[in-house]
Image 1: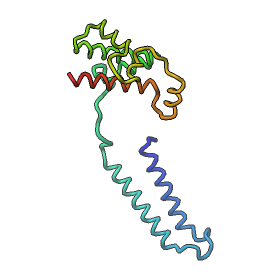
Image 2 (image 1 turned 180 degrees about the vertical axis):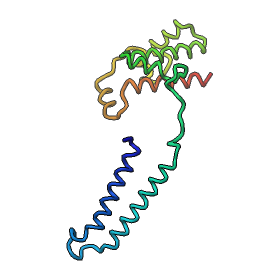
Image 3 (image 1 turned 135 degrees about the vertical axis):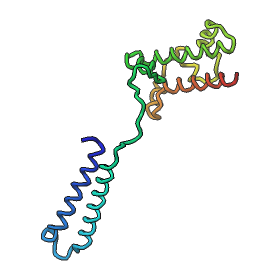
Length: 175
């Protein structure tokens, strides 16, 4: 059963139970507790809705919008290289190196050589944002930052990458 058929099956079972209670419920319920007419009306309504849903689903040949085939070897998806790095266990260092490569490219557009750009990243002179600077200068993540990240749901490394990419974007847009 697919996920779409499960709610339909549950609805049909609930409808069958409702009809069964309506038909056989009088002996099971205390005398005078509930009139049979509202129970029977609810069961008929639920059965009609279930049948209507079944009809609509059986006549509907399209199950939704067709998405493009992304399993093809010719389709590239942005971020695949980062996913591969994370999958291979390279993790944070691979992401840091990727952001560093982008930073060097942005600094080269500003007229710096690759060595000067790398030196600027290591020294932290390129930004006023402390988390962005810490991504490249080798500052270890403190216990306080880890605890704060755990409580806020934004890990310190994610915060550093977000600040660095925002600063790089700002610098690139200012050009």
